[in-house]
Image 1 (spheres, rainbow, N blue to C red):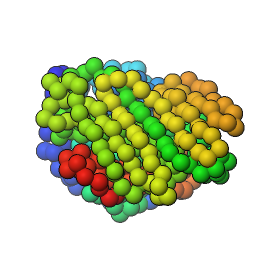
Image 2: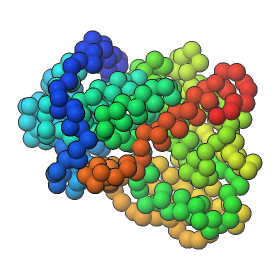
Image 3: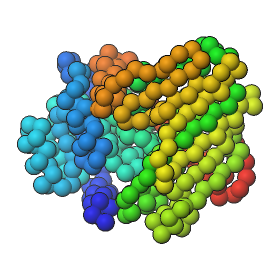
Length: 366
């Protein structure tokens, strides 16, 4: 209960603060920072920030942990001491908008429940800061588009935290598919899930972006998209249910199975779960099958194909460090982001179609 109450409180504070007024510095947002390293402010200090992003920022070459945003004062003190963060770079959800006046902060990395992503992306963009946002990008396609529009209007970049799109094993199987080294893709089977032990987290709150399809489901959707090298045209069928309905209440999906239709009659069967541990991607091609297991693991992805092993070993949190370094380089070089906001929007469009199909029992065009 503690985790949800804190997040709920933060959301209330954030909504109460409004978008605020911004200084003329906002107009300078488009100028690439003339720095060797970009200063990153993490917004939200839960597990992902604490256990993965902050440690990764100790490994990065092109960016560093410059600031934090949290609604928990004692947590702020711990982070200040642990990472030597100046008091002037520590914000809460009431004074967040004053980050506009802080030249130490170049990028705001949003690591909040999905229901808060759009608001804080837009506020960060209006403050003239580049934005990295964790997946799922937002709750709806409309929210995703508003985030993209706000960043474009304020001449700042937007990237979604798809760490796997930056890592070499994912790039390796994509290359095989793109070049047709094993012939055409015929079918994809993909699953992403783990046993979620929390019972009153935002992942069990529909209004905060809960339900497995928004969280682990995005990994499975990514697997099908990257595995086929195409975009789906329809959701053929969906099965959504809860093995623990006392936790995943009122039809909220704890497990989702869906069949996605791709051009040329290619089908992708995906499964995502908060009930069981599963992580694999099988790409059946004319000349053999690419097998990735895991395909989206924190400890590293690996696999094989008739062409040989797909295994560039590395350790946590190398994925996140690599992701942030590549994104920082893109900003400093004034180049397009490797994984832009449009990539997150595509997945949320599919998520919404899956939910519609689950509700209606019908095939849904995308």
